[in-house]
Amino acid sequence: MRTIVLLHYLSDPVLREQIQRATNKAEAYNGFTKWLHFGSHGYLRSHDPELQEKAIKFLDLVASSVIFSTTVDMTEQLRQMNITGLTIRTEDLAVISPHRRDNVLRFGDYDTTSLHIPPGPFQSSFATDSPEAVAYSHVADQPSRREGEGGA
Image (cartoon, rainbow, N blue to C red):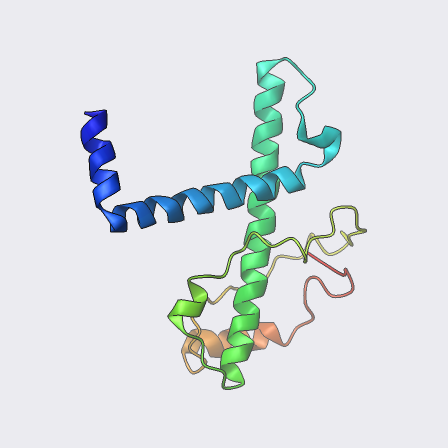
């Protein structure tokens, strides 16, 4: 069975490309979480499986939160580019990644005084004339939740 799968992989360039893309996404995420896990150089100090599981789950939660925040910021910027008349192509969107590091201050000071204020509604469409976009424009006029923090 392994030989058949290997032969299929070797003979099908589309399959190889699909596997390569999936592997690259997984490696990008792993590299991002390794970069985020800076304490003890990313090593788990405890030999207790329960504590190790908690540490891994916490790291995944932090990584997911940073990726979500970066995705929201990127969407807002893309929407602004669209409003100004720049054409946003699907091909361009396919190659951007939320695993960015330049917008994250791992050792920075973060303002937590506004954490109790719920965020406004999120509009995922790029259409600027939709009812959701009009509703979103009122939220977008409010000060950013990161204003003055210097990063995500």
